[in-house]
Amino acid sequence: MSISYKIDQTPYARALGYLGTKLVVVEDGRVTSHRQQNWHDFCEKLRSNADSAQNKAIMDDFKEFAVDHIEWFNAIPCEFEFKDTVYDADWCWDLATRLGLLALLKEDDQ
Image 1 (cartoon, helix red, strand yellow):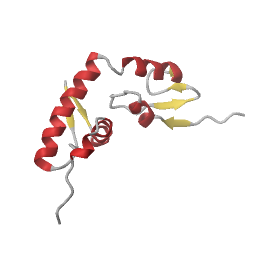
Image 2: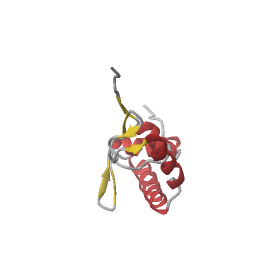
Image 3: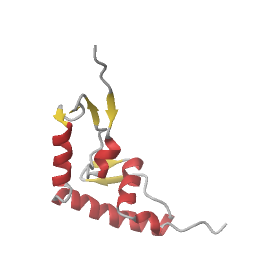
């Protein structure tokens, strides 16, 4: 009898360029959250699409929004909306980290 495990691979997928809002769940080499795609094929698509126009547009808009937000509030945004999709705080933090925006945060003078 073999045991099957579901693993949340969202952080790894984000590191490869995944910008979706759904969790990336893998079980037995298949991405069960994304039409049962083969995990290795899924990763390869992420790598090849990382510089796609859509991803670049999202990243450019987020960077502009986040830099402005940091200047005003000294905080990473908790939400970001792009073309009717709302991205949550985890997504914002991950992308801000990847874009090197954490360096823009100022230390409290207290």
